[in-house]
View 1: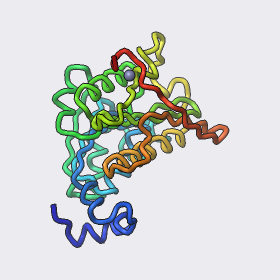
View 2 (view 1 turned 120 degrees about the vertical axis):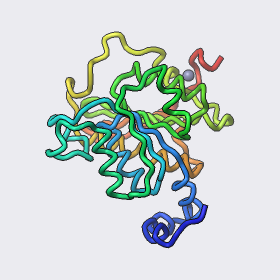
View 3 (view 1 turned 90 degrees about the vertical axis):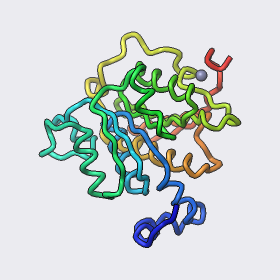
Length: 249
Ligand SMILES: [Zn+2]
């Protein structure tokens, strides 16, 4: 693809980074990203990815915006309450860059609909709020060799995972290596047990950061590790995640 003058100006901050340059910026513009969940994780991820130059974005979420979402779901304002999250997300990112091709799905992701929704996208960002969906998304991405970037948040704590199933050499672990099945008494959502907005914002922003790193094939991938952060104590920890579930045998 060719990059035009407007794009060079718009992305000059990134292009000036030697590790990105015009070639890297073209890769960012060309990549295709699916964001599942337009909530506390999805909205910061979406705004940074849209601003970074990605021009193909799909968003899946069945929910409408409620007043209690506003403390952490940063694309939405008071006047958006009652409207569908995907409609407002699309409107807001088109205000940033009208060239973005945005596809929206007003539905919950399921084992059966993920195949047709996710097929065209290279990278899947999982910002859902339950491990049942996360494991289904994980299984699809593993089988279909996608790059999966996954965030999980609760109270003051956040977790970030990158699974690069596309690059065979990485022999990526998967979410089932960390959690073989969903906990039986999984809470309905993070709202009920409490969540500080800044945890969502930090993990969501890091999800966008890791997506950009994977697009650019940076050598320092988070694949094979888990980042755990505790924003009550301001502690960030990186731990190894071994490739050890029965999926890999
Ligand atoms: Zn596994």
